[in-house]
Length: 247
Image (cartoon, rainbow, N blue to C red; front, side, top):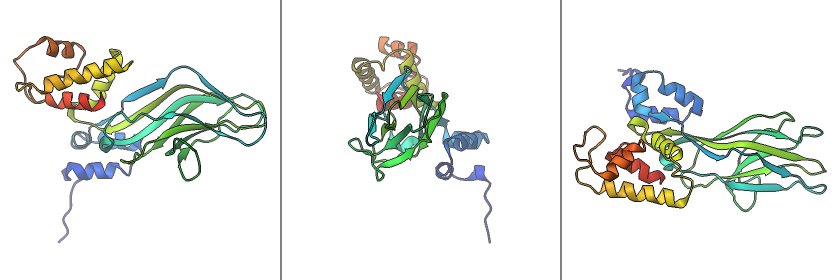
């Protein structure tokens, strides 16, 4: 006898497995289908801004085209909760002549070759427009951003609002995304001191026996708890554990 299951009756881990075959946009749409899928997936979309300013590269006047290393892509969250990552920006080339510029995601920091390329963009247009490069994250791999400008004289590449967008299977109440957003708004991610200070505060609060879970309410108050709450951080074990992961 065949057993028929409605999708909302399936275990949460099956919902998550199904979503791995979706693009980030489809995964978000899936999570909005019904409350059961929403509560099983808890999809969130936090953003890490690399730079809002223009970055500019010029190709060699002659000879072979060279790949230019830009930077390591930050993976702020535990890899097992990352559905996918997107490198996004506004970009264009020099505005005339032949078009050769590309952005490339590679697994090699030292050399960008065919074996290390995960994904590469289409060729940049003369007029500025948006770019999104989406890829899945392997648990043991680090990723790097490269560009190819083009040689032959006059070739340039312009990028601004360069950022990484993460699509997460978050915790209930979206603790990972919400905590990162609050840290950025409070300026705590601007330097190492701010990040380490937040981590110390989270560890201190996690060591308190009276600390509640996300479903409980604490009746104990302290200056440290009040400070974190003023920052917009939920002071419970789930929220602080997530905060510690990204600090």
